[in-house]
Length: 115
Picture 1 (cartoon, rainbow, N blue to C red):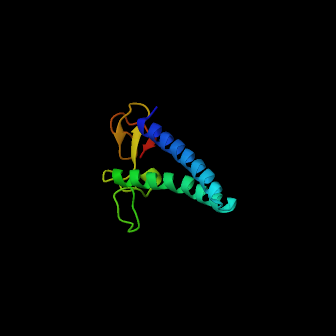
Picture 2 (picture 1 turned 90 degrees about the horizontal axis):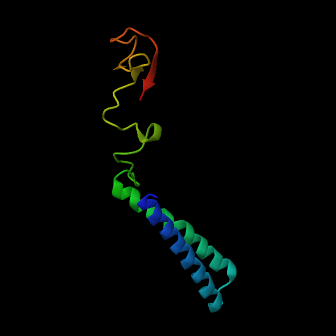
Picture 3 (picture 1 turned 180 degrees about the horizontal axis):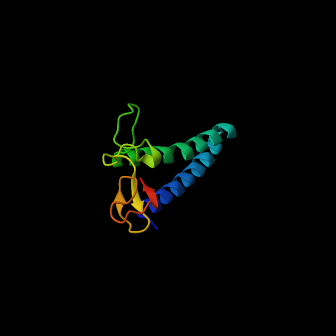
């Protein structure tokens, strides 16, 4: 299992245990159940979102509020890559990468797009 995924699941379980403990504690203090459920749901939803945002910003692919960043955009985040100078094609006969038309190596027109 991926160590980051394992860390995320441990954090998720810990936040669930903390939320249940908080709900029980607030119940003993006399807080109405709908307020304690709202707090528990907010903690259980917001803490993983904060953890994800912090992880994405540490990797440098989170845009934040300003909209300026190096990642994101395009198809699966590939729109801002520097080496995406158009569509390249791969010949199905000789596996040669070229820019289009027929294959310069073997002359075949059977090709597939390589993004």
